[in-house]
Image (spheres, rainbow, N blue to C red):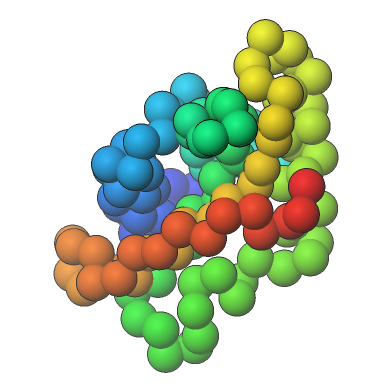
Length: 124
């Protein structure tokens, strides 16, 4: 059973709006495979062509314990990579170029106080 975290859901919704404004096209949200989940799967048009982008969203209500991105551990990154590889294998018609990005969201109430996209967090 999946526990629904309202803060995480709000952060993902804010992240989706943010990346759409940056030109990303969202393909899917909350893709699950036994060993992992990808919050957002999208494509981004770049000068070199379309890039299939797997986006991890980290949301916090303060930065008291560090940046939201600091919570992406090497262990978590390994599961993101494996899940992204599985997704690409099962969706061969999507762009060949792949990347894992992260969006950090710091909330102030129900609004984003700070939102930041970090591209290519894995070198994948």
